[in-house]
Amino acid sequence: MRKVIVLGANGKVGRILIDKLKNSSRFHPVAAVRKEEQLEQFKEKGVDTQLVSLEDSVEAISQVLKGNDAIVLPQDPAAAQETTKPWRLIWTVRSKQWKPLRK
Image (cartoon, rainbow, N blue to C red; front, side, top):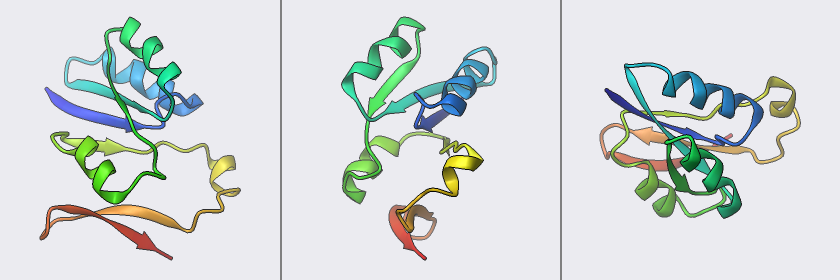
């Protein structure tokens, strides 16, 4: 079973994805959320949770993401056009670290 962490799991697309992964026999979902009050709803469903914000340090985010087979950052296409932060994280295979990728 592949462990998949979903960043922004409390968003519209993230909640749908978590439910689909949970109902699959091939995946073990992990819900990553920004606020402590969002954790309980996933725990009630039997979904593992992590508390992390993409505004945290690269080191902190990297610690949360370690041990997962896949990482998903779902985003509503309409919201993507309004994004003001011109950076993302990228997994560098050679160094096995998360690093900021700037436009």
